Structure formats: structure tokens, C-alpha cells
Image 1 (cartoon, helix red, strand yellow):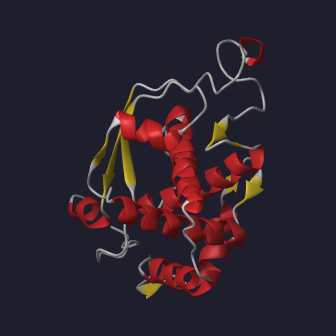
Image 2: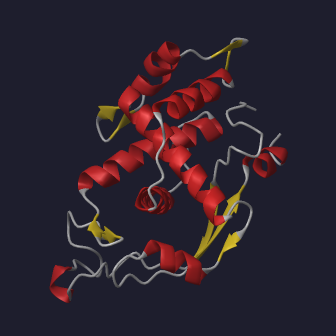
Length: 213
């Protein structure tokens, strides 16, 4: 298996298993704004009182693609068992966590981001050698198109920074390896008038890797 995750306790990759009864509707919109019982086109709701723009959603989607690759060495759109609904849930959960980290003032320095990127790539085996940044960008990132645009180094940098922010959020809130109750999740999510009931399980990297051959 690809060794993409630091195994010591400071690095928490989060793997979210969602056993869910979730209503991703009623995002603080009036009945006239809903189409067919869902959201109006172009309206992605709000988090912590701030509107989710198309750019916010698309950036997070591109980050999730990279996250997924480091977990499985494959892209989510190449996995026939990974549904669009599941991807949408993961994107919103990642967006929620990264926004929460930013709202708490969690800052990722340039040195921390650069170090994390090199650590991740050094743990990816490329014919017996660590994967170089150039190889990763040209042979992996730029070969994957998300909504018609190839992934690039700016997506990778944003992914690294948000992931480190999420890691620090997990450490601050003590969530690694614990259940987040529906009440806690709803309190964090704060999507205006959204009906949200879910159990999210966060595993530390060491626990996750120990179970993967």
C-alpha cells in the first residue's frame, strides 16, 4: 500500500465514514427558491453565516480529489462504487471543517505547508524512489480533469494548507478516533435551517493504516 501518511501522532489524516440520514435541503431558502424539493440552481447554501459560492465548492471538490488520490492512489471518478451523492457529502464535510479551522484563526505557515508536501510525496513510491514534485504535477495532477479543468499545483498547495488546518482543528477539538454525535455535527455545521442528522466517525491515520493491507 502507498505510504502517504505520516504515522506519528502529530499527523491526523481524517477518514470519514458517514452512516447518514441527511437532508441536504432547506438551506435557509424560502419555498419559492427551491426547485423540485431541492436547492435553486447555483445556490449552495451557507456555512457559519457565509454563503458558499460556486468557487468555494469547486475548490473544495478539487482538494477532495487530491485527498482521495493520496488515500487510494486512484481518482474518485474512476471508482464506479463511489457515488456522486457520497462525493457531495465528502466535499461539504471537508468545506465545513476547513471553514471551521479558519474561523478559529488556525494558520498554516509556508514552511509547514512545504514540509508537509514533501513528506507526503516522499512516502509515495515511484519505482523505488520518492515521488518528485515535478513528476507528481506532470504525470498525476495534470492528467486528471475535474469539471473540464486539469488539477494543478495551486490545487495541491490549497489542499495541503487546508488539510493541515483540519489536522490542527482535530487536535484542538480532540476528535481523532471519536464519534461526533449528531448534535455536535449540527452545531459545527451551522447551515441555516438545514435538516442535518449524521454520525461521522474520524479515525487517526495510524488506526486506519493498521487495518489496510
